[in-house]
Amino acid sequence: MQPLLHRYGVATIAISKDSVEDAAAHKRRDNLSFALLSDPDLEVIGQYGLVHRAGFEFVTRFVFGLALGYPVGFKQMAIPTSLLIDESGTVRWIDQAEDYRLRGDESRIEHALREVWGDPEPE
Image (tube, rainbow, N blue to C red):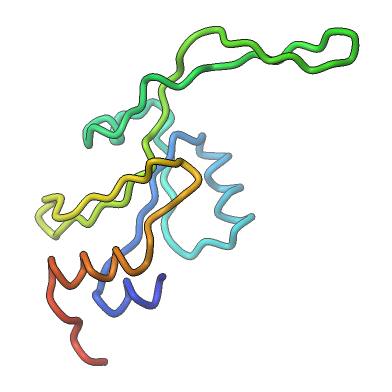
């Protein structure tokens, strides 16, 4: 998807709740070329209204060699979301996945780029 975003002059920045160390390991593991920022306290993520507060937090205990997980409360996490933000900081388009394992679809993002900024300049 980076070539598509590059044609529109869009910089990619990902923000997650991961620690700085975990974000750096993720960037290395997946060979990511864009910025991957850490927001463990959900400060920036919360400013965009993207905090999910209903996720269960589980603790795993081993009983007779079997791993048993049980909920101990709720934890906050980021809602997987793609945003197009213009130069002035205005959110111009937002896309949220119903399933955290799914991310922005390239055709939907291309459609949004055209809607927001028109056709890209020829290279």
